[in-house]
Length: 376
Image 1: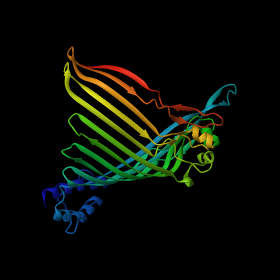
Image 2: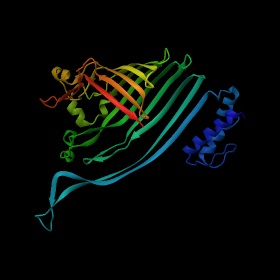
Image 3: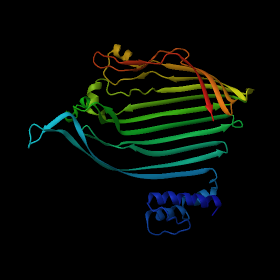
Image 4: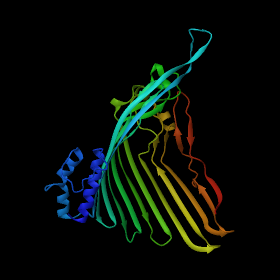
């Protein structure tokens, strides 16, 4: 067995023992004994097993196999008080007690991750992984809501090129959500027992998301750093699984994703000088953040309401100039002048439609400031 084969075998043994819940029994040289873990390892380490194939082609310096598992036992108990509801005591009709509702929830959830990393060169890493995850369920406003679960694929490449002056990370992903949780008011759930509650959690529905993320950093000359990032996410709900109360409110064309832009991005440039005065140096930075148009309400919308509740394409440009690492009275000081939203973009950032009321908010106006900070 090669040295690489030995450590790969050790890693597999640990992962498989975790799945077999027998951590600590790691038969690195072992034969098949009791338990699923060792039986699986025997198949993998045998004459026709995977490890032997990898040892033959001897690529274990470039390949990492990753795995893990977790089991969570979730128990919740308690009571919740029904708002503005009381009940008279039989012994004394003039006395009242608040009306309560019991909270009981129990669920066991298993999650796991498997992945493969491959390094074709010292400065390039490719990877692929599959993982599951969840958000705990529970009970609120007399409504029991299920665990929100996700099953995701992700693959990508990470590269450090040109003597590490250029770094680029690209990943693509696909996620399936089940029982996506949503917080709303008890009245909007359509469930009579939840009517008096100001807050309730329901299973919003199942959804699928796909997209990519691309991050880049370039240092063309010493002191200058340029960054550019781009992201895309496309999420769609399965209308047949949407909570009936939400589906009824949404109307045609059905329940839509909201507060979730398809495209996001950012650009930045930062230049750092050498020492210029009092031991300090200049930092000059400009950045811009972008998002595509975004629906901010799932409620049924007329053309007029659609305009009132949909953000346009938004660019927010910021700048900062700082004199950093100033030697001052035995400490390091920094003096900075900054500006946010330099183009004074006043686009809609949030809007909603409630009957004839349209609460909205907008991007914060152009803002300037001066900061003085010390490090002791």
